[in-house]
Amino acid sequence: MENKSHAFAAGLFVLLLGAALLSALYWLNGDREATRDYIVVTKQNIGGLNPQAQVRYRGIRVGKVSDIRLDPQDRSNILVTIAVRADLPLSRGTVAKLSYQGVTGLAHILLLETGNGDDPLLPEGGVPPRIAMIPSLIDELGETGTATLVQAQQLMASANAMLTPDNARRLAATLANLEAASAGLKPVLGHLDTTLVQVNKLLDDRNVGRLSQAAADVGPLLGDARLLLTRMQATSERIDLAVGDAAGGGAAALVPRLNDMAADFSQTSHQLSRLLRILEESPQGLVFGVPAVPPGPGEAGFAPDKEK
Image (tube, rainbow, N blue to C red; front, side, top):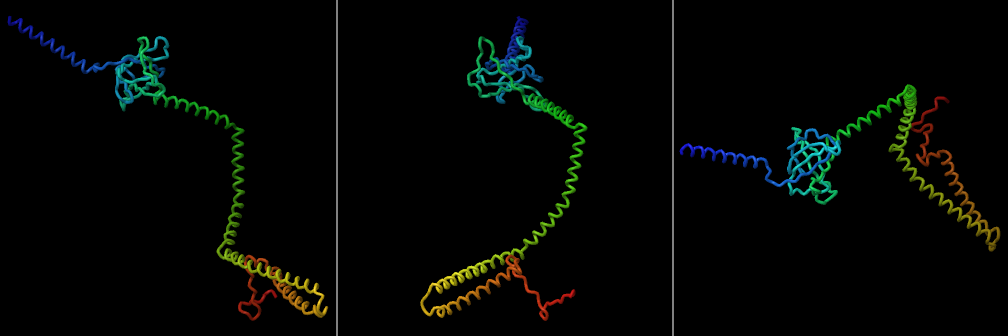
């Protein structure tokens, strides 16, 4: 009887230990949540993706890869079956993307929402719904790099076609002409520098002051001209009055008026003669002022002419 009791206790212990191990495996396996299957379809290379790889939805772990196989109906397609949580709100705008985790390079599937469709993604006829896979960053870089290399090859071929011996000679001749033209521009640039120096000298403070003084002198000259015109108009009016007045002593009555008129004409002619003489002798005086009269013999600063 004692042997039978020991055997029963040992068997009961084995059963309890097995149940505990099964419970632990079930707990660690994570199959407690209800899952739903989806099939990711791609024509790209999925190197690094293995069964039991993680499935993430916007960065959150929501499931795992359960199977990877070729499409029996189209051998160019790769079918990746994923099991994700049943409460995950996938829609017809959901796409998959192959991503890599950290520096380990472990591949996983990343589910993204494009917003192209809000209808729920549900199975039809008992067949899991399909999700399209878009190119990953590495695939895009590979395609872009290939296209860039093709364009670089085309550019090199075009450059080689342009650099024929005839074109090379023409290019050399063009460079020689440019060099000659640049050498011819040096004297022009030198003259231009000289001209700019002269312009700077003309536009210094003293010349600007002379221009200002000349502008100030023009005003009085115009005033004198207006005064002369006024006097001439008055004289003309006096002549008209003298000629038209028949009263008085005739010619005797006109004599005083003619004398006044002659005096006015004489003064006016003197002023006009002075103005014309100034303009004739020094027309630049309107801009730079009237030049100073050179000193004569016996005056300070007089220098006799050695040639004479």
